[in-house]
Amino acid sequence: MPVYRAPVDDYKFLLHELFEVEKQSDLPRFADLSADTIDDILTNAGKFCEQVLQPLNQSGDEEGCHFENGVVRTPKGFAEAYKQYYEAGWGGLGAPEEVGGSNLPPVITMAVAEMQASANHSLSMYPWLTSAAYSALYATGTPWMREHVVPKMVSGEWSGTMCLSEPHCGTDLRLMKTRAVEQPDGSYRMTGTKIFISGGDHDLADNIIHMVIAKILDENGRAANDLSAVNFFMVPKYVVSEDGRMGARNGVATGGIEKKMGIKGNATCVLNFDDAVAWRLGPKPAAAKAGEKAPASAGMAGMFAMMNAARIGVGLQGVAAAEVAYQNGLNYALTRRVGRALDGAHEPDQPADLEIVHPDVRRMLLHCRAFVEGARALALWTSINIAIASSSRSERETAALLVDLMTPVIKAFFTDMGFEAANFAMQCYGGHGYIRDNGVEQFVRDARINQIYEGANGVQAIDLVGRKLARKNGAAPIALLSLIGNWLGKNDSEDLAAFTKPVRRGLDTLQQATMWLAQHGLQKPNDAGAAAMDYLRLMGIVVVGWMWAQMAKLALAKSAAREGNTSIYDAKLNCARYWMERMMPECAMLYERIQAGSDTIMAFEPTVN
Image 1 (cartoon, rainbow, N blue to C red):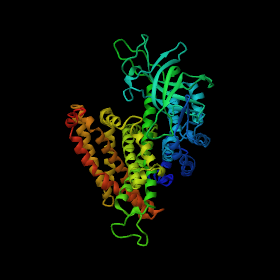
Image 2: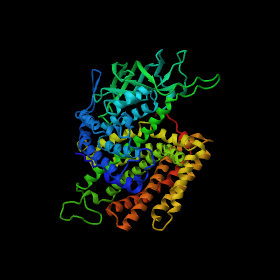
Image 3: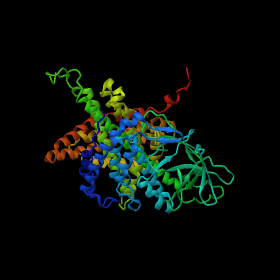
Image 4: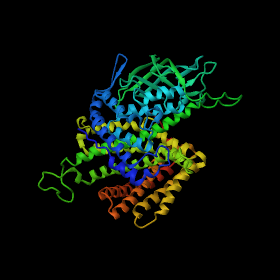
């Protein structure tokens, strides 16, 4: 039976000691964040995840969702757990108070979301997607939607989805075929098909509010083959009147549920929109002037905001997958006996030593832990920057740039490393890891989707290299490189040399790689494309390394002062050393690959033998 223990202590270390969030009271929604409040939320969220969500994870995977006679049923126990989740108030942690939420900042909601995903990836996705949907609706919807629809989503009475992909297109929105036609009353009628819709239909809520992108037809019945025609809509499963009453079934039908590799407890649906009533979100754009390109829909800003938040959330799912997989790999290594330690028997009175004595097993487990705790720190640092970007602080513009830069890194690097960690944990089990009864193979299957949905990782890398680096004349990478460089300059001491020198080498390599891309990317775009994944990983390693250098500084100071439980700080220092010794050396190799360019890759002839 798989195990899970919420990482409450690590979150306390990060929030109270490393980032000292109680001192950030000037930030939006931080004013009431006392240490006691934070600890109470973390402790109770951890208990809920351990006691309610986690016990349903393996059984939900075994049973999966059912689709019969057009009706989707979730696995046994999911509906009851979903109800408990909302009754306890977890669904509205980050929602404004005026719609029934607790108005807590992302630094808290991220922590709780990670625990939920570790405990039960499939079940946690239903409220997670609802939160993304109601946040977008609150930002772009009309007053009646904010007053009557959003509160029902916050309470869990209604749920929400994101409907983006179609059978023939995903990333390239220009190719969409789903159409919307304006009606005399200002509403729209939508027709088309969307696929891969997580939580697209289920038996957990009374209504489902679909957030859909579609093209608006012009007066000639055509849609432009560019993003100017793409708009953002609210399309409920059951039609909703402006006073919030739920009416007749809308023209949204479930065409089926996918038979998937993982996250089997989440209903991934095909949705068919057949003359469905839809409401356009955001103000209507002004008409284009003669000879000019039509302006993009204002509501699309809400869609992109929803997607960026979702990408950070998926990155956190990568951390969550690594955390629960690590815990189970460690648990197995501490109970399984196999062979003798290389330096002699550790327990001569036993027939064999525990698996944990073997260096390679420890390497895999330490790799997982160093990633999880370093990535968790980076995610929280980014969440604080999200708050700063919405504040009146002078550095708000820089914070916004850093969030924009880190979003594809968090999404892609975290999920690549999370899948790697899940595989390492399964490897610790040997052949038993390949057997379903032990549960660890589920973590591998569930983790794999994180690298694909909300924008595949290769797309994230292209976004980083092709858009984020050059935006505003390179302001974001300049800000990041300066920030890390300044910190290293202020902490150039012998005591910290084991942690600062590797980060300095990595930072110099990242700067060289950035300059290389700036020089070669415009002249030869395929060079940038071929380098994108290596560059993204390089940035991820360096920035997480910087997080580890900061944690090492804190741990050294706390250990020297003998403050608190020093074993926590000893473990932090060991993880930091691992990252410096085993991960930072990758930077030079990645830069060498970046400089290889694209000639060999593009010379590949895609023929079938």
